Length: 137
Image 1 (tube, one colour):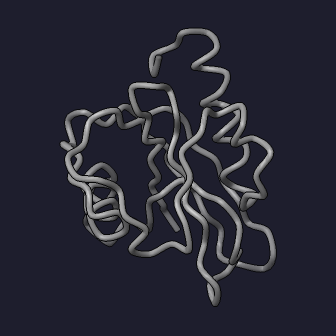
Image 2 (image 1 turned 60 degrees about the horizontal axis):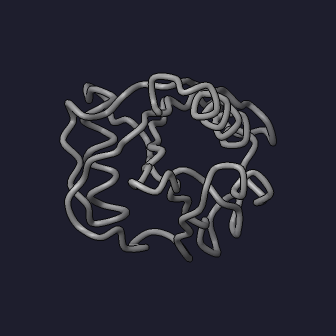
């Protein structure tokens, strides 16, 4: 299963995480917003669609910067590959339409949150890239 996610970074360097709702796999854990890529859909287009559906924001696809990917096949679930993009430009105020809660914080502070297994290594890559002044800085 191919999944896309966004590290939404505001001008203060804070990243948005969303809390998975009750009744979903990994309920209560914190994750990057995003979702599944539909058959025939380009990953960036899927992420733009998912962010509109989940957060009510509009992200120009040309502003998405690919950062990293991670995979997970734990818990007997289908194998998953997650592509993480960085987004610094969007219109609208993020709303928790498909989440229990939203949280903005610097990546170092977010590292202490409980996360699904596929999100934690991606947060580490984001933190490292920002610390080095990498492409997402």
